[in-house]
Image 1: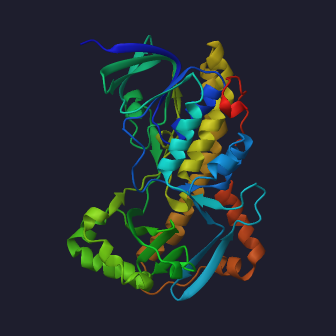
Image 2: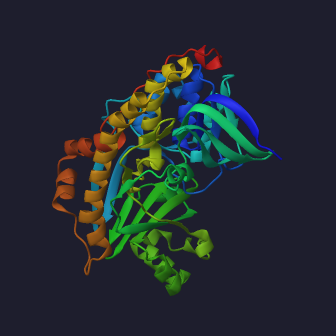
Image 3: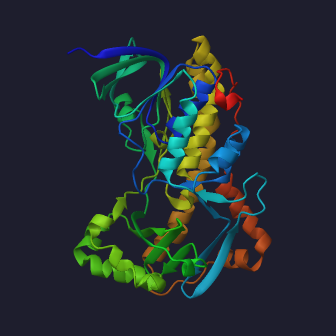
Length: 413
């Protein structure tokens, strides 16, 4: 059976934060856009669930903040670490120059569902679930669409521009044979969850011990926990057994002792293999890569999805009108990379410094760690906590919505 063929002005591959935001903004600007998402829904655990103030500010600019914040979420205004036996406060978000002075902890599936609902208000928004892009369609050295596999069989999507938002394991990145610089990482992360109780409310965000590091996100009914291990160390953790793993977690957060049995086996633990890389060129004629497909970020700071969303806004700002008028050029694609490569690179540099100067020494420490001098300074002089807060919450080059609201729909009322 031959493939069904459709024609769009833009085809976005990947229904994650970058893809959904880009699809919504383009449809709002009157661009005929298809978004291809390979899964049947957005219900996948342990994705980035932190919505930073930079993203919340975009919701304000779109007139969607009140509706967005009606979704269940938790607020994170300050970050503290327990390093050895000392509690250190390092970040205070309450003084940010944004409308929301906190990080919203929200399941990513709720966030993506919200963007899908906003996009569906426009007739030019075509979200296709269970549709996996498998290859690029190229003619005379230019990308002119993608081949995909969907519920009804093979599908060819012809478009003047394909935007790959399909993550750090991007299929389209591999097909395009684009080269990246790999920066390495000294760690991987094991995600799991345990029940949260009201008496836990004052617990620090991070727990640091000799050779151990645990990050805990307050998700209301449960803690979403990230246990950091040396790179490639998961097989060793598994070989030592689930009891030993629970004991190590308990040593960092003793208050969890009576509920760690909820982590009954390694089936309850998800491995995140940490990668940090950056494409040398984010585009080819007819193709643009953004988000993790262009620059895989470290989980440090939880900034990955927010950087990806900033990429999407910048791409929409530059490309909406050229797409609508059928005149997207290589200069337009290069301009998106030129605008976004600097904040991506600078964010990665900060993450690499933290990985190499803080995380690696902790994971290989022979004795109980002590707070670094800079952390002690932040704790002793609270106004200084606003500096890392600005870097974490807003980033190096926050984007603002410049796309024209051409399409008519309830979101424009």
